[in-house]
Image 1: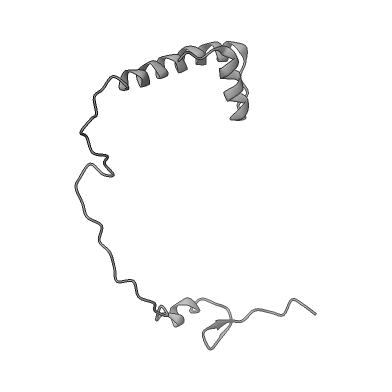
Image 2: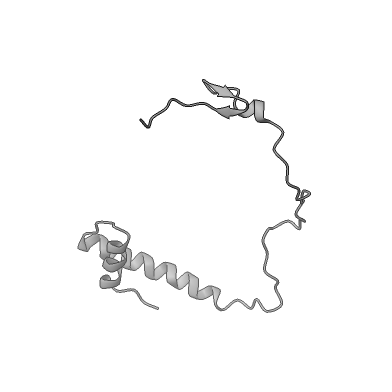
Length: 95
């Protein structure tokens, strides 16, 4: 795939980047070089290679899925200017 100047300007406009004609010509060469490297990856045989989520084999640690009240109501309202029975108290704003 080859990128032309019009494509570079269109992508720059979509990305909301101001690009001059000289910058677009320079980017055209850079983008074509990047796409050339990506096309080289198509030549690699990856059949039989399983997809990875990590470079190190790990298993996810899972906690028990149980519903709790958090058991920390005092900690939640500890820094509140006003609280009553574990609820935040705020000034009345509606008349």
